[in-house]
Length: 351
Ligand SMILES: Cc1cc2nc3c(=O)[nH]c(=O)nc-3n(C[C@H](O)[C@H](O)[C@H](O)COP(=O)(O)OP(=O)(O)OC[C@H]3O[C@@H](n4cnc5c(N)ncnc54)[C@H](O)[C@@H]3O)c2cc1C
Image 1 (tube, rainbow, N blue to C red):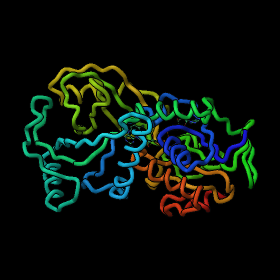
Image 2 (image 1 turned 135 degrees about the vertical axis):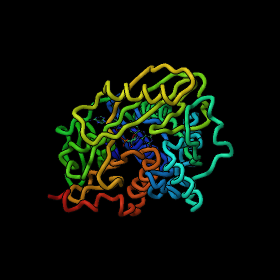
Image 3 (image 1 turned 180 degrees about the vertical axis):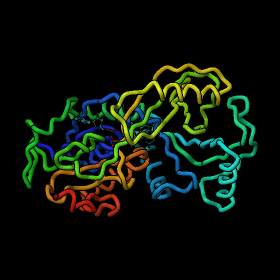
Image 4 (image 1 turned 120 degrees about the vertical axis):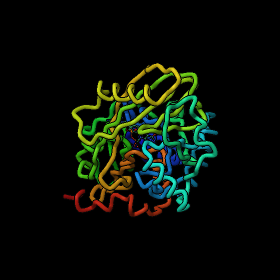
């Protein structure tokens, strides 16, 4: 089988890369093993434009939003699903100091931050003492439907192999890569945390980060907003809500822990005034890295081995933008943003 590009992984990165290559009329095969606890299958899909105790804008957020909102809408139209929803974030102040910090940032006109009209409007649903601020706009990406819908499309076009990719079976030269019966011009790894084990890419400064989430059922939490108090709480379908997450740099496995479950149950009991029932508990590992910038582009020594990865906590906002950059690089030799291009690691990659 001959194709231009072999893509490993159909999380949010592989989905967007294959989507843009499809639009550019280029040929590709995706190989994905449908790992149920891959980061894209555990994530909520929240896009929050601000971050940290100083509540500052996240990297490139204005540029990312103006690209990604129409991109998700277009993908949604093509797949006949609602791919993205605008929601504001109700950020309950955990302490009076945090309220002051938020108010200061609103005064500084920091962007995305607003005072609510009525500080106590959620009192029937939540227990809170210091009011809340509003972050607007935020977005919720419908990963739950996008990934299977795009998968179905790839399958019906004979562009997806549902199997485990085994790197030992890969042969590569300067002009082509050969994997089992597939001959391709280039291979691009969108395989999340697995790239950190790859003989070609493991020197990239991955800093994997584990996170856990709980799914609850409840009838009485507004689905119109994302709520935050220590953790994020958002509706993901009808009466099903996602709450998470924690960030662990040191961990011995990728499994859910009793400790997180207890801690989250306690948070919910002290935060929610409405009844809820825990229905699931999952864990996953984020393909994060020390610089908090994506890994995009081609290996400096092996010109036909590429990567779209390193999305960390922000796959939903970074993946579409950088998949388009990589697709344009492949189809029109456009430059990849230097802060994302793995050329910046040429020294360690060729060691
Ligand atoms: C708990 C948690 C909550 C999160 N919440 C959010 C959020 O709300 N918003 C947000 O933007 N980001 C969030 N993230 C981060 C986000 O999930 C990641 O940035 C993003 O999913 C990374 O996508 P990816 O496609 O690069 O990798 P992955 O999602 O890991 O996808 C890799 C794909 O490759 C496949 N694969 C791997 N190895 C092989 C192999 N050998 N053979 C075949 N297939 C293979 C896997 O099955 C998978 O489909 C969260 C992450 C976690 C863990």
